[in-house]
Amino acid sequence: MLIIGSHVSFGKTQLMGSLKEALSYGANTFMFYTGAPTNTVRKPINDIFTTDAYEIMNEEGIDLQNIICHAPYIVNLANRNDEDKYNFSVNFIKGEVSRCEKLGITKLVLHPGSAVKITSEEGINNIINGLNRILTPECKVQILLETMAGKGSELGCTTEQLKQIIDNVTNKKCIGVCLDTCHLNDAGYDMQNFEEYLDDFDKQIGLDKIGCIHINDSKNPKASHKDRHANIGFGYLGFDALNNIVYNPRLEKIPKILETPYIGDTDESKERLYPPYKFEIEMFRNKKFDKELLNKIRNYYKN
Image (cartoon, rainbow, N blue to C red):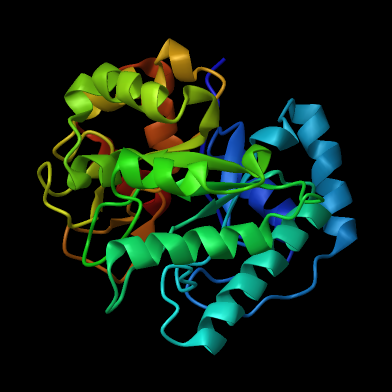
């Protein structure tokens, strides 16, 4: 069974609202932030919304183990130039882990971090130190390090860097990887030969460590180190390559999450933006690229 969904909001009704939005897209999984991705402001988890969401998940056959949470972008475990900020990042992620545990979510995606004004090796050691403080023996959440595009001083843009981090995390059962197809392309990996990438990943880390896959096209060519997502089939990866990844038998049980851009009234418009996920999910289910996708999205939401 194809396990596919998208990023959804976590608003006033929290997990319940996230679930309803995902169902409106025809999804059977989803990913959310427990607050804004660009700040660390968080509201208490409301158990009533959580319980109501569980009931509907059971009715719809959605497995809670396939639901993904994402930590905000602004925490940076790689940078320890300011010890207070570093400790804040560690403690904040501990808090996100606790929020996931309260929600029953078992997977938390995390950007590894950026080595600002330090060497990559120092940054990796800082990430390892932070993760070992966060992932206590009692932890019930697996942190998934996201593969990054290598923009600026980003870490986690090579399999070797991810392996080094994972090898040095004490609590092995609570560390894994989230693949991102746009980031992998922009980091220099050939998504047209995805089997070769998987073979190498399996040799170095192990496919059992893959907990989630972000399915995104890229606005830039391979090895551009740009990190600009494109809608499915409208970027340099193309629909066929992404469809092959989505249906790769070695990844059948892994949740696939779309993070593609919202669509404007025109290509340049930013006044009204529409989510593309209902139609992109439908494309994958049909296994056929729709070149009129963007216009269909606009017309659907206008009507």
